[in-house]
Amino acid sequence: MDLELSGKIVVVTGAGRGHGESMSLALAQAGATVAVLDLDGESARRVSDEIVRRGGASSAHQIDVTDRAAVETAMQGIRSQFGRIDVLINNACAAIRRIPFLEMEAAEWDQVIAVNLRGAFNCSQMAGRIMKEQGGGRMINISSFAAGLPAAGFAAYSASKAGLEALSKIVAGELGAFGVTAVYVRPGVVETEFTKPGHAGEVGEKMRSVIASGRFGTTEELARVICFLASPLSEYVNGGPITVDGGKYVCQF
Image 1 (cartoon, rainbow, N blue to C red):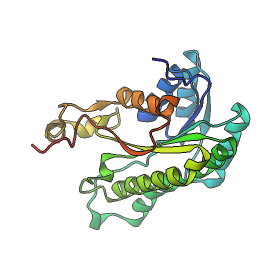
Image 2: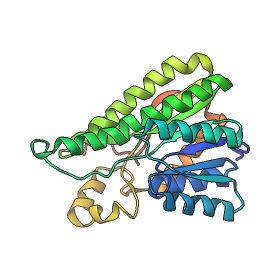
Image 3: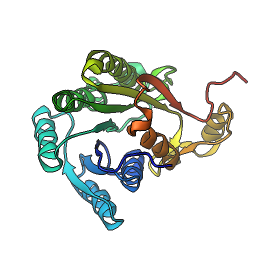
Image 4: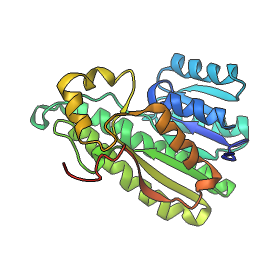
């Protein structure tokens, strides 16, 4: 199926590895021009170079999404280079760890909220202004099942994702009149090389036991859904949640 992504300019944050890398490669394969943004400039360039090696079009940007001035510079630079921004995918996520709420340091809370929520705000506002001016655009925010059913020990992460979902609704509501839509996606347990060690042994078995499909998802499976949501074929999908979780909540066992 042709997703009609040819010629579309897509910005992906946190695109240097994991979910973001898979999304970027899949979007480029479907015909989109992908601006690869990551805090790690070397990783961003590696993914961008791979897109070009495969015959696609891309640019790489080292960016801290919590830095408003840097985000504005990057978004304006991407528009100057490619003429527009059609899709923004807010995927950047702070490193997280399981820690009891009463033991969490304020600095750790602030860092997670800054990247996951304020970073998405920065990128959405800067890209949103461009999208409004050009008469349309699409934002896709990568949330988590933890926004609806938090896991103990992940207070900051869960709060940041719940806030991201509320932000998505506001953007969809306020910018819809200007042709700008926003959706938020709730992945379930989608494995990356980074998360695999934490899914080993009894912990992993317990996590799999409540998934109807009986397995974890892959970054490629998530990327395929993102490609559809980024495409004109899904333009009437606005808001959320869009779940990609293998049936994690379909019933109680």
